[in-house]
Image (cartoon, rainbow, N blue to C red; front, side, top):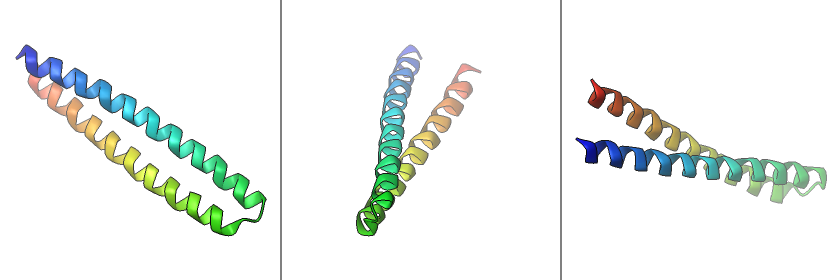
Length: 78
């Protein structure tokens, strides 16, 4: 039982780290997109917009995994 909980907390920490990194990616590309739009570089802005959307999708998947793991941990604790 302890191994499962220990593994879960390790996975949870890894997910938190991955989530933080992905959120930084999203923020960085949103700022780059804004800068590109200021410079009327529409192609570049479009590229950054698409990349930012992909990063946002990854953030959403990571958050879903976190919620699932928290739910599983609560069930194990019962």
